[in-house]
Length: 151
Image (cartoon, rainbow, N blue to C red; front, top):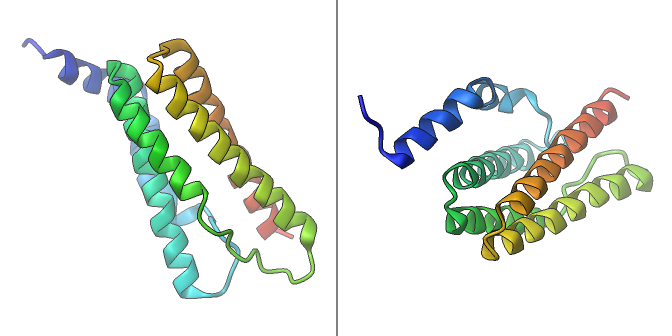
């Protein structure tokens, strides 16, 4: 069976990251993206998280197949989502936690902007490096939110 370049790259993408692609949608409900009792806010944050995951997956696919336009569009989407207002983290008066979350949010937006720039310049190594840093920021932020919720 002969695969087209895009089909091969997509198969490679899913084969190389099969665990990630398989686990993420099932785990999204377990990843706290906001600390709040407000059901509507939690649902809005869940929708935002799904959008981030979709854009991140498109960016990764674009990297694998060297479709820099795809990466650029996905990065713009990630940047725009990260620039939306910050959710209420719950504990009134705890400015430190809000500041830490704000740091992660702004770092994410900055990295998404760099991802977009390197994709526009068609720089595969720099684009991949920034994508990895963006992923690290996601993981660190979610680790922080989990730790925050546990307090």
